Amino acid sequence: MTDSNPASKAPGAILEALAALLDGPGLQAGDAIETRFRKDWYAPLGAPPLAVVRPRSSAEVAAVLALCNRVGQPVVPQGGLTGLAGAATPAGGEVVLSLERMRGVEEIDTQAGTMTVLAGTTLQAAQDAAREAGWLLAVDLGARGSCQIGGNIATNAGGNRVIRYGMMRDQVLGLEAVLADGTVVSSLNKMQKNNAGYDVRQLFIGSEGTLGVITRAVLRLAPLPAATQTALCALSGYGDVVRLLRHAQQKLSGRLSAFEVMWADFYGVVTTQVAGVRAPLPAGHPFYVLLDLQGNDAAQDAPAFEGMLEAAMEAGLIQDAAVAASHKEAQSFWQLRDAVAEFPVMWAPNAAFDVSLPIGRIGDFADALRARVLATWPHAELVNFGHVGDSNLHVSVRLPGATDEDFPEHEISGAVYAVVRDFQGSISAEHGIGFHKKPYLHCSRSPGELALMRLLKRSLDPNNILSPGRVFDLG
Image: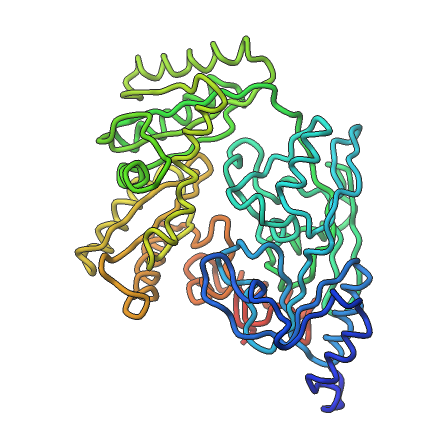
């Protein structure tokens, strides 16, 4: 329970107590707080936090949380601030708990095929360490240089390779987390099979910092591919997109590692408005698919990949195709898809959505969504793109001429999520709920599910100090 002495909750007393737990660089307060701790990528500044704490160990995390829990001081854990749903943005008077000083790979077990890594390690650093050891850390996303492993786990990150390797959840064999009261729960399991009671790691994966602070993890590694084949294909309809997906999965026997779909609107914008992005295929086709094969034998993989494409063309699934002849050319193909990072600036202000639908209904959803938006905002511009091979669609909407002051983001969000609800989809495929999507969580979760979420929150964080107000309200 919280401390009953009101004086113990005075900001000055809390700061003094925190200073006693941390070294000099471990605490920022007042004017010394760097603005980078107050916002997600491309987001406006959040309210000033009471302090920023930067612990160096799980023991320091535990000491900070025990203190804050005792006096009822809200805490918001932070990783690389790339989640984009506002879960890590401070809401005024909170203590920001940054994991950035807890970084590094503690072990790579080549016999088990695992990596033990601290939560503040960037995804790219972990990927590089795995690669140097001859392994692949399979989760990959555009924010790899900034996002952190703890944040990837807390939001159950997805990215470009989910179709083959699964979400972040599928890479986590074990983890360590600190509860709101400072209790350290260590479950650093290395085994794929472990049915000894409840699987406690699943409580924290995707919980967005509301149930505990993840401090380290054991990640599953995959064999490092020796060769990659990449192609960009043009298709005439969404039905052909789905048929090509199933055709490629069957012909490539599990080696299909990416299946990215771009609608004509997205392809047209990025090839004409983003510097450095070229068009490997002519504009004008309704759909473009970027697909990869990752394998271990280029002599066999290349003919298999080309044979799959030739069979698809003969069957009328593909209207045109370009096959990357080098790694550099493959990277240029991927620039098409990665150009999405330019939209928050290039299309500002805009409303961006990360949703998931049953794969067979994504085409109909995109059509229904466009009709719904244009019925209210006839001059709106929309682009659609995404990891359709794993049911994930990204949508961006802008109103030409709108300003930050008059852009109706809330109304557009309501319209989009109403269509998601009608199609029985999810309002969040891979970025979480945070603050931004909280009003719409009921569109994807039943009353029973929401009640269970609240029960878990009250059980693990009875004083509601961890990321209060994110994901849902306790009521």
